[in-house]
Length: 192
Length: 120
Image (cartoon, rainbow over the protein chains, first blue to last red):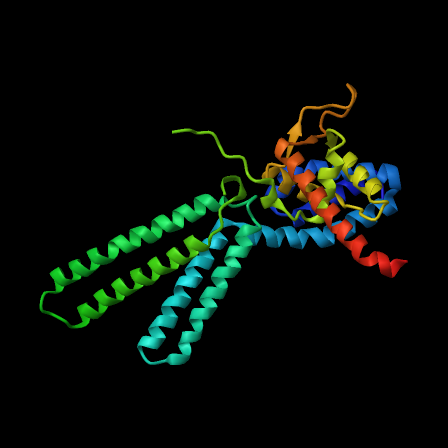
């Protein structure tokens, strides 16, 4: 393969990497292939580059996916849903549902270890502060919702009361979940 | 209020992944561009560690993000390709590299002490 064709082919293959990586290092990667081709010959250069591509492309894709803050936030929602479902199932008598609680804890621990490895993508300290602030806001909302419900409902304790309790309970679960994930979010080393 | 940032503890970066330590060691000799780092890693490891381009730049990306390495304006010579990016150790990078070297040296000492009777 001629060098220019090889370079074009490699540049095309860079699409397998996450966008921010190829935008930042695409030219350097291509330059390195050219250097390797010059020093080792095309066959050895391509062997090394192909192996590298096979190993790193899925890994960098996965790292990007797991390290992004939105993925982390999605996991927080997952923890919240699991915790809520676990507690609710116990309240309504479906006791095996309590198993969802340890699953929520495992998810929180997994999230913590993933975050700890991803400080190049996530500012742990900022994320921790944001989650704890959210938890504090939700805790502050609890008595407001409770007193507001009492005021609105008055003596009527029908379907509206169930809805009000549902809202209060959901906010409680969210506060607990944000509190747990906030406390378990590790601080970035730079500000630890 | 004081706005001075606290410098992170080098110990908190340990243990370093092998690829990151190799790159830091390569940069202890001075500023280098990516391909030169790749060559230095290869020769310092007796050709045992052969990095591919994406492994190298993925590692550099992480080291830059962690504040251990930074880009430099250094050029080896005036006719050096100006598109090449050079990298150098930061002060923190030097400290972390030294701590990791101490840690590994300590492991080597323990290993030699424990295995010496068996090797004799």
